[in-house]
Each structure stands twice: as structure tokens, then as C-alpha cells.
Image (cartoon, rainbow over all chains, first blue to last red; front, side, top):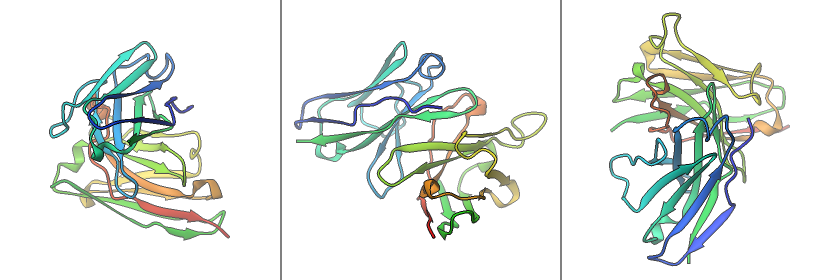
Length: 109
Length: 126
């Protein structure tokens, strides 16, 4: 039940794009199209921003998009805004359990 | 508005026990699985357990645990009270974390956490 691998941090200027990778294995990310992403501001509950790799819940801006290739999923935030500064976690279904990534801190320069 | 309200956290000595509660309101709790996810200080999120609805299979709820808590933590649900509980025994310093409950409907192949509780801190220290 090892964690998925994410970069510890990424940064970008307002209006530009950043992409966060999430690498797992053939038993989690590679096996299922059940990758979800969560935005987490310190002191608050995490918020779902993408599910099933690339689907957005109601209310989430289309600046957030997702994809997957093999054992690696990705989250792209386009048109960065100041309020996007937060921690982002990927999560994959893995049969009888779930596994999260280690988290990526997004900094808006 | 859907709400998950948590209670039961606090300070406990190593080897001690604590029971967390997660109460749901304003949604059909009985159709959701409830998960527990924790975040240790300075660390990322860690999924630790889930329990499916009692009606999800002919034999009742399905329960799963992460290896890190298996044999020490027990998850249960009381449908009449719209609540899920996490009984934590033999607590260790490494169990210190903020604990969140979160919903999904994995039994319907909705494998994502759509609603979250506010989080409750647990500190294991002498």
C-alpha cells in the first residue's frame, strides 16, 4: 500500500498553467480509471476537484483538467489564479483499498 | 447542504483507546460508504478504512482497512443514527493526525470522496 508519487511542489505565474503528475503502479493507477484529485487548503477539509481521471464535479471550474497514461495520471491547472494556491492530492482506487499521493504544493508566484 | 459532523478526537497516551464519530445529515446516508482518511503533521493524506452500506451486499457491509491500522482499529456504522464510528485501540505516536471521514459510493463504482467531515485531531503522547 505504498503512496502514489507526486512532485513535492510546483509553481507558476498567474494566468499560466501547471501540471502535476501522479505515478502509481499496475495495481492502482494503471489498473483502474478511478483516479481522483483533491484540493486541500490548510485547516480545511479536502475538496474533490476531479474524479474518474478527468470528470469535474459541479461547481469546479474547467480550468482544472485531468488525464492518464499507463501508470501515471496528471492534473493540469490552466489560467492559474491566486486562490489555486493549495496542496493537491491524487488518489487511486486499488481494489480493497485506496491510495493517495504524497501531495503537491502549488504556489502561485 | 450535506454535512458530516465529526467528534471524539483528543489527547491519549500510547497504548490507549479513542472512539471517533462521524454523523451525517441532509443526505441519504444509508446509500454511501464512509471512509476514514488521516493526515499526520507535515504529511500527506492516508486512507485508513471504509465501510459500505449494510445493503450493498447480501451479507451486509464490506469493511476494509489499511495495513497500518489493521487489527487495532475497528470501523462500524449505525444506520438508525446516521453515524459511523472508528474505534482506535493500541494507539501509537504515529497515529497522531487529523482524522477526516468522507463519503463515497464505491459499491456503485463511484470511487471518489465527495463529502468530507471537518476533521478531528488525535494526539497520541505520554
